[in-house]
Structures are given as structure tokens and as C-alpha cells.
Amino acid sequence: MKTIKKGVFLVALLIAQISIGQNIDDLMLYRKDFKNISGKNTVSVTSYEKDGSHYVYAGGIGDVDVYSLDADGKLTPISNHKLHMEKGPSRGMVADNINGTDFLFVANKHGNVIETFKILDNGALERVSLVEDTDETHLGVAITLQVIHMKSASYLFIGGLEETPGLSSFKIHDDGKLTHVMSMKDDETIHTDGIIGMFVHKIKGKTYLYTGGFQDNGVSSFRVYDNGKFKNVNNISDNTTDRYLTGAYPVTGATLDGNHYVVVGHRHHKYYKRGGFIKRPDFVYHGDGVSVFKVDKKGALIPHFVLKDDENTKLQGQTRIEIVSTDNNEAVLAVGTRDDASIQLLKLDKEGILSPINYLETGFSIYYGLRSHKIGDDNFLIAGSFRSDLRKVASYKIAPKIDRGDKVIKHIVHLKYKEDASEEQINAAVNAFIDLKNKIPTVADFEWGLNDSTEGHTKGLTHTFVITFNDEHAREVYLFHEAHIALLNNYAAFFADAVVMDYWAEK
Image (tube, rainbow, N blue to C red; front, side):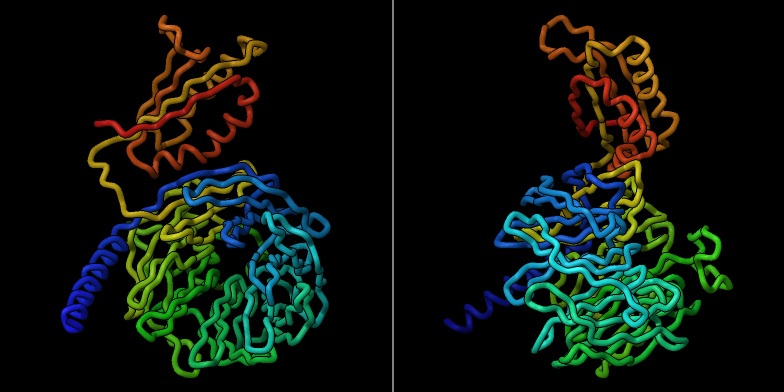
């Protein structure tokens, strides 16, 4: 009987693994919701589960917006909180539990401070601590934060981008206050000049921290000790063959079948136009790629694999890489891009090989603001943009790709204008809507007309616009395009009501 049960279990496990593999190879992103933000833009996004409720924190210039996230991916605004001196943008936000209390740690980039907020029962925030920059702590232009839990205490590691960059460690006390433990100033060996990504591996009882150096084009590994101090292990610099690290930006990792990997992306210096911003302007553009490093027994990084960008991927200007899901054999990663304005899904197998799955053109550039979050069995991504005209945060569900065949999307907008809107104002709004077909290249077809129904069920709606898109990418580009946002910003004040519906139709 035991043998039969074991055999049945093994067959079921094999079937499950095959099913999982098939789903992973064909995953896609589907937008579930988007909401306005209170601030100027969304630079960073993080999330947290507290007592069974799920919260999203969207940080921009001067503030942090708080939302709840439900099992359908719907976002509901909760509160808004100002940063110190209303500076920012808020970067490197990380939420964690310290001895029973939930905190959100925020790097106030241009306020040159680290702010600690207590997460209240409804997800809202209450500031409890503020640590300012000094010549010894390297908190100026703070960008990235990483909580590391050791046996005796928890520590906040901080990296930034300034004239005297470096890596710092602070002990986190039970009340959220921070005490400086150690700082290591950047030099010509280690890659801590512009730490925009960090990741931690726990390997056989030892803790290792991995950092990317945006300005010095490389990655470094550090051994972290129980007292919060750390030492450099090894350093890997950019080249044009087996790594792509010019402008090293996001850093993450995974452990698969006993192998420890660190995954590093970059926003190549060629994408930066500001004079004097790049300290080493003698770089050579050698393309875009995501680099995989294997970690040896001593925690050191070893170049392992590079997935190079091509016509089938969206990897230009990587600003955030999130682990969506993982099991013992493979992991799903999401890459947010500023220059491709997309989210690219990748698979990392147990051999450390990356391969593309699918991507979604979001219609907006992602600037560090991408976060993976799980509710039950479902995986979500929350994304934001630094665009000041957009002022939105969006949620996406990751699910098996739907075969649409040759169908197209029909996007139907019914509008009613306010009674006090003048004929000139209405005509200007209508003409702006019509002009979208000339300004947004993903519009495949466009038509509009005035209501002519006599059935009495129009609810007062008078104008109908029908826009055709060839796929999800085209609809997303339209929805968040600067011209569409400008239309809403300029003319929504004249709308009395609107009904918007989409459906898939045969060509």
C-alpha cells in the first residue's frame, strides 16, 4: 500500500511539474487597475502584508501614497504622507517587521535622510525616526535600502549616489530608530559608487550582500556579520563579453536546486543626456543585457550568463528586476524598463540560464517603480512612472497567456458633456479626441459620431468614439500616452459622465 501511494504521489508530482513548466513558459501580464497618486510622480513602489491585508506604498517627489490591494488586483487609496522637507523622491522603500512592529523605511534621496515610518493597523504611516546624512555615513542622495535579519539584531543597509559614496549599516531598534554601525567608503576597487540595487543570500549560515555600482560600472559582494559589520569579498567590473554592467542598476537573485544566483541589470550610460552626470564619460555602448552571476562557497560572484537584448525582448534601460515566483527548478523574473517602457518576463532555470517569456508594453517608462506581490496563489506586479503628467500607479496580474487569435480590441467611449459647457469647449474637446489618431501610432482605426437613438436609453450620453487596437500593447500605449493624458487633463472638466467598454472582435 505504501509503495502504491508513493508511486501515485510521484506521478502526480511529475504532472504538476509539467503543468507548472508549461504555464511559466507562456505567462503574460494583464492590467487589473490603475489609480491616481497625490504627488507629482511615482518613483518607487513597495508592498506589504499586515494581518492578512495587503498594502501598496507608492513614493514620489515629496510624499508617499498608501493603497490597499485586493485579491482581484484592485487598488483603493488610503492615505498620503509628506516626506521630510517635502523633498525626495522616496527611493529604496522597504517594509519589514522588527520584533513584532511593522515599519516602512524610506530613503529620502534629496532630503539626504533615512525616514522610518510605523505601519498602522489600516496600512497608513506614522513617522517615528529620522536619520540625517553625515560625512561618515554616506546617506547623501540615498537611493537603496536593504533590511538584513541576523541572529541577534536586524540591520538596515544603505547605499546612495553622492560625491563621497559608500555603503553603510545601521542597527534597527524595536522602536524603528537607527544607530550607525559601520560605513565603508567607495574606492577604486569596490563597486559602491551609486548603489541602486542590493540583494542578500544566506548560504550555509553565512550572510552575503551584493551591490551594484551605477557610476563605477560593476557589482560587489560583502560578507555581513552578526554585529552588522561587513567586509568586501570580491568585485566584478563591466566588459563587453560575459557581463553587461555599464550603469549597473537593479540587483536581485534566486536559489535554484542548491545553486545561488545574482541577477544584475543596467541602464546603460548612453541613455543619460545630462552633462556631467556620468563620472566616467569614456564608456562604450555595447548593447543591453541582463547578467547572471553564480555565487561560490565563499560568497564570491562568478560571471555565468548574459541574456542579450534583441528584437524579441524589451531590455533597454532596465531600472528594476523583481522575482515574481520561484520553486526549486526555476524562477520567473519581471524586468521594468525606462527606455523600452515595458515589463519583460524572464525565466531563470536551475542551470542559471535566462530566457524570455513574454512582455507587455506598459505605455509609460518605469523608473525604479516596480514591485512583485503575491496574494494567495496569484502573482501581481505594481508599477509606477516618474512621468509628472501621468501621476498614476497600476497593478497587473501574471497569468497564462490568452490566445486571442486574429481578434482586435474595440475601445468604446460614450460621453456626456456638462450643460454649462459652451459649444466652443465641446468642439475643442471632440477635436482633441479625434486628433489622438494622429498623435498615437498604436491606434489602428478610429470613428466617432453623435447619438441618433430614439429608444430612450442613452442616459443622456451624446457622443460615441470607437477606437481599434491590434493587441494589448497598443491599448496600453494609448491609455498612458502623453496625448491621451493631456486630453483628460485639458477637457475632463467639461465631461458630465462617461461610459467606457472594451471587447475583442474579429478583424
